[in-house]
Length: 281
View 1 (spheres, rainbow, N blue to C red):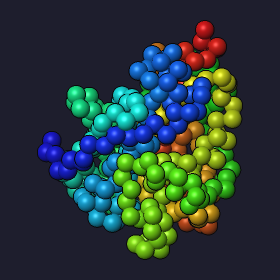
View 2 (cartoon, one colour; view 1 turned 135 degrees about the vertical axis):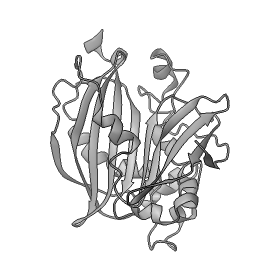
View 3 (cartoon, one colour; view 1 turned 120 degrees about the vertical axis):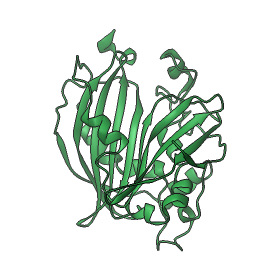
View 4 (tube, one colour; view 1 turned 90 degrees about the vertical axis):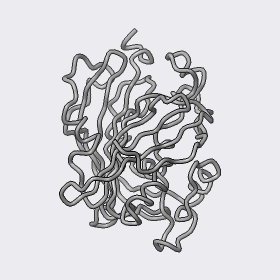
């Protein structure tokens, strides 16, 4: 595979380190076998857009997809950089392979990026289609495949985005100014946040307490970009349930709309640590 673009070394900040009891908290993470509080996968996603715009042009903001499977965790300020292969024409879309590495060559995330329309063979669409059958669910036992939630109001404020831009690894101009697209574009972490209201409704029946972490995220622009200070509605459904020896696994397929127009989709997989739940003691 020919590497087309290589990003700069960056040191992502664990912005949720003070959230005690979660996977980003040093004490909790080390108790569960990690080296320390983990950097959220959505933060790692923020290193890719500058290279994706270089590869696909500004159309990526309108009809692009970034589909990432998280393979290894990093801790606060650990250096990482991203790679993108040459793009291939597949039907109406252009698709490239993407990945991120640590200094020792460990692959942190891998997946696909595309532009030009929906990619039903993206990294995560393929993984969802081949998930392992359920062995046993305890935390997720009250959830059911196909469960939906009604549309939930969603808005991310400029004030919140400005706070995040102080620590972002790639502070692109369109995140700070409305000049290019008429409104300020949301970085990846805030796009994930925009889907949050519907995500929470779909997970209301998960049995606490538990510690979860992102296992994979795909953001697809349908009629992008996604803007701050803009009223959207978020909806979705449970798209997959599975488990592994260490985790229970929840997939959600989400849609963000503005009025009657779809703007973006998110396919997201969360891992719930069995060792964090009294149901598995």
